[in-house]
Image 1 (tube, rainbow, N blue to C red):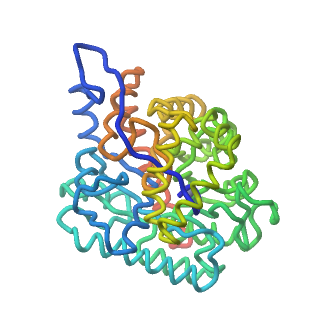
Image 2 (cartoon, rainbow, N blue to C red):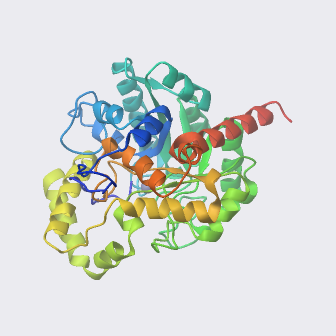
Length: 406
Ligand SMILES: [Zn+2]
């Protein structure tokens, strides 16, 4: 999730492929085979917000948003982390209650669609889901504010199947600084470090997307398991504070972690970011329109924000960002961190998607583009999901060791 009042997008696309008159989204046979024989893992999707008002039908192809079962199947998405999210200003027991409602909503969707989905809590369960021809559904809590500074709540989330927690969202928690707030803790407090240790023991991945640079380094030092960034891009290309610097990506990689590239246009494109910053009235107008249309219904805001932002692009008020920008970030991260340390964390249904990556059906284009760039089939598989599965396996191993008192 990018922020409370949101901007997102939907539409059509264009990626050229060498050869005879091919359609805009043409995927070569080689790419198609590779893509559909790979386990494609997406570690950040905000579709959960759409579950909450009871109107959205995950099993039906929707004309809005980016995720539903038919489109996940069409795009070859094998595992999806549904985000448990609310603005970081919501704290205390209310945050816990709302998180539990969302966890239940995800679990209920899985139960209702058990022919197509299965709840997974480990890398082995993702592979097993694949063998059964089902999509693995996982959960990540996007923001430590939802544990109400209580390790017992963290343990309860883990018991319900949550397999990562982002230490902060956009605002600081009582124990960790966020990248988009004023630093007050100098990174992680002592209790924040205890939380990381408990996450290690529970086998809950430590997610550093959204945290301040100092929080990242504190977590990196304390964590016995590799860290991961569930949805972050490269700061060298787009200077968003929540994107990772080259040095951070190198240091994350040195400890075995993985950065999952985020597709949000405001994190991919400096030009888009500058245009938004240069015209704050646009954001105000969009926010006002969203409140009018949706009140505080986040699911509605996502869809309407998407529509309004694309209108601004069509009207020339914001620049058009193409899908290739995702590939540029993947390629940069691979050059900096290494091929073993990059994956996919779309932010679908929680952010503004570039033209050509409107929904899950477009995912094979990533495979096509990486092959065209000269990536080997094995390397493409790593980016699509194998790197994430490796980190999960390692996090699980560390958890077993800690529980055995080693
Ligand atoms: Zn986010």
